[in-house]
Image 1 (spheres, rainbow, N blue to C red):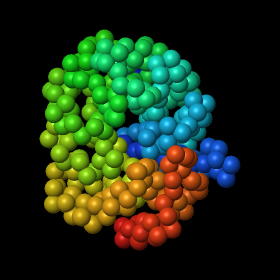
Image 2: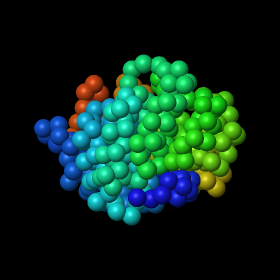
Image 3: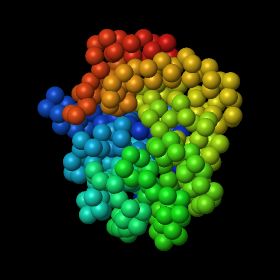
Length: 301
């Protein structure tokens, strides 16, 4: 296991990947297809893999499947930091974290708890309990019904040595900037908006210098090129790539709820990998939309 502070520094060093989780014809996790996809992606540099996350359909996986995904990822890419999605209620999240650690995981991305909105002291108790349950590094993900304030996160960072990162998918730049100022170098900061390349430059102004890329799943060359331009503050290249690829992709993604995951999985399938369908309640792209994705991918190859 990579020590938490070392994992934090690795995360800061480059782009993060959010692999999809493939399923077979019986809707079960397809470990061989997952390994093949990860091996193909390994030719392109990333600072870490976040498996069984939002793009990896954590919301549809059982805890045992999350453990299996983690174990498979570590076997396929033994030298890459493996961070796994973790969530739901506190007791279940703690058990999942322990299973991920036992499977060879290096860290967890703590996604929102289930259903309800909690007060700040309740969210703090939840995060603190998960941190205490594992030796791995923990990254908190602000999104949907789980939004930790700058003040709460600062207290957690002081109390939980293995809390190493903060990821944002809310778009609340004011809170993000308060968090980065309040915590400084204590945490790694990750952009987590859907298709974060669309927001990366704005988030950089709030102190967020890296992000997880979902399109890396099927156009890794494009994702790496954008991150290189972003890191070099080559805004002209970023603008061109946004116009040529990312905004057209976003038009497909935005055509139906849940396509932020479905379109990525379709892209991976179009590159020749077995992915299976997304699990309900998500739905797959239509044939017309898949054709649009194919044209978009062909323009980037």
